[in-house]
Image (spheres, rainbow, N blue to C red):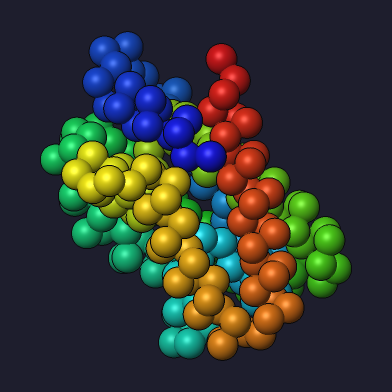
Length: 206
């Protein structure tokens, strides 16, 4: 499911027809959808995503810190590494996306979750999250530093991008079992699959 990401990271970082205004608007829309998914569906229901987003949700419950601020903070070293591999444009757009997300999750934090129904959380939360992340990737940025790390590792190790991400997320979802319980971990895995299927569907569109 990760094979469609790389052309967008590499293509947008080298594309000479870059439009800062257009990319910025779409990235704001994508970050808004992600913020709505996190604060109104996932975080308060103890459902996590994979990668940095999921790790940030876990840590936000442990340390009572805003999830958006954690995403921005934890992404910084990965984005710095991505600068050397994917270019300055990727770094600027990704920092912009993470900053917008941090601000919007802070704004939405006081609001109650939209629903507690597991099926609605999985489907609506996953679709909103996947659509938002897919738009951000399609327009040359990234919210999840682990994907950058996986791209770099896959170039140097005998693993595909998907295998690298799978290893990272296996550890993450395993940790959520001990923190939130087996049921919530199962919901998290289902939401993760919906979100990333949505991402790849968006990236496959021309």
